[in-house]
Image (cartoon, rainbow, N blue to C red; front, side, top):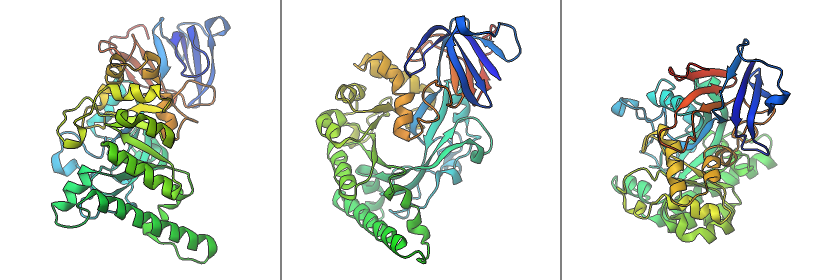
Length: 389
């Protein structure tokens, strides 16, 4: 059992505590409340005294490629894109994530306790994302949800990759047509499987069933406004759920995105405008979408920008108009809801995973340090200068 006492607790749920305690048993939160209701004393076994510092849920990265595009490894450590076939839905992120990547340690030091990780955007259909914890050596033990989403991509990346090979898709029309054909064939496969129980399983299409059954969303790489609207059009045609990832020009069509009902994962805004389709990228986007009532999260798209800068990206979004409370929500409970894992992470509530971070200030501010990072009730990182813990 682990008990955190005397913390300024922000739960991202119904109630916060100016001087509170939180108890974790067998990896789950079992109690939370005011210190006046706590029987545990400072100095006891399994007790961490936060000494008035901020205690909040572990931060969540809603879209990245950590462990798949490894740092310091070059081509040998880059497994992000299978850039020889535009349709690869059967690829699984869990088969390429290397927990030894330095990004995992950086994440823990920044208070990031979980992440949505998957393939890149060179293909129209890239494969299956996984939602994982950021501490461990065996990826199978780090999984929270897999598959967690199916990656699709529009616009510049698939165009450049396949036009350069002199094969289709070389245009936005062909990207959309390729995806429609794949979804049509997948739905036909689903129909045959439902009507004929003896139907033999097909490895290529079996992976689409969780998407078609509404268990996981499409995860759409979209920057430009027209690509965002094409993604919405196709998802609506096939009755699928979807997240709009990057959404760089989302602020230009905020009303249309709100009408679609799809959430947005915005970023990486802490990166150069090195492609035509990100020329309108700005930290203001997430605030504009949020004010429209759209559920929004923020991403670094690691390694496009570094994962440890996720809280700072949220802070810069606040500087550009996002309310401060929404800045914290964009990297905690909103991210969890968009990733389909809010039943386990994203807020401090009884029954949820014991993923907790103690900060010496607001994590959206650049000088703030993560003093202690806890995953499933275990301390996985402790600042060497945090002697009081």
